[in-house]
Length: 503
Image (cartoon, rainbow, N blue to C red; front, side, top):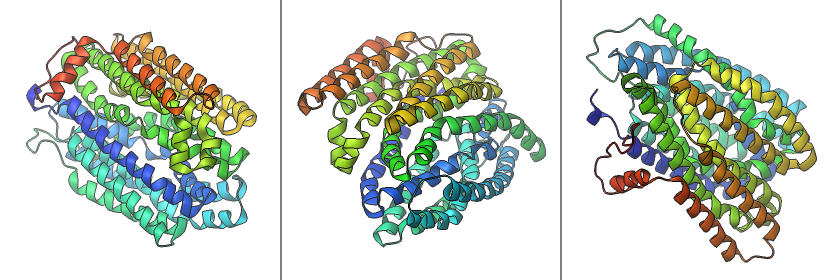
């Protein structure tokens, strides 16, 4: 495929980031209403169902990740994608059955024997299990079908579908609660939206080229997807625990109410990584094809630019938020959240820098490394993270949970960046990109935490803007600014650095 026909990586990333930003805004607007109507404990039930469903990602069979890579590779060889799509749907249906059954058993056991909650909240949580089964069960199909679209680089369709799906999910939740339906009605309404989304995506997916010269058998494609996906699935088991174990620990060791005071700022913080997530989602298939067609050095150049732009942009956004975190939490959710969640929120905001860099490195690994790489990496990280969660949550509650997550993310970023460089045989980033912004934001958070009651909010906000702006100026090169100017001017992005900077 010729270069001009390729979708622009920059424009695709911006479009995806805008869609995620709109979803973040919708979530930020909806959460105060949902928490206010449901109460902190019942909202915690609602959120914990999502966390429990996330622990079953290993039963997804890795078909989302495998579909993206398999479709992208088949396109590079001019092969038809019809058999791959059929295999994705068949495997997704099998995975849906396994996930739904496992969720029913896990959720019932967790609520009756694990989490600390009131009797009334426990009754609601147990009654919500059937709707949770549907929500969890459709996830493998959703991820597999999205994986096909990513592999075909039909990014515009992915962005539009994800945006509509996410906004409708939020809307039906708000309507259900406004009509007095509570947690049960909210979950069933969202389950219905998810089923409709799966049906819509199944109609949308199709081979990228109707005139492909050959089509492998569906059974062979299913075996290829499983061979590629199962290592990703095993890695996903560890990754799910690494992502959520501190939340589960808060629910078990503290209370469902404490879980809400931690999970709400946690989820809001992660929403800020929309650009990094958008970039990573389109970067992996592009790197996979570019490395095959033009060589690892070109792919490494793309990764280096992605590191600089994503880390600089994240620091610029996050620094002012760190400075005025208590005021924002008070305005958004009230004084109770401001009192109990300010320190955890600041720790989580600082940790967004290494998480952003890890997203780029993960894209490189998904494009080039053996799938077992993630399994080995996450298996090595998990016992260390579990020990950290145990010690820090017991000692400092939700602030300790945030600290444990931040330490794990920093260690993961360092390891993935090193592995990404090895996978390409070329360096994918410098030390300054990783630790410089994190240290600057960490010092800002520490200073603000100590001086909140001394410095006016305007002074702290100005300091945040100064730190964020300085970080951008230090990280971004002249070529990076050239890319921005060309993009904003609407002209095609050229090659301004060895390694595909114009992509």
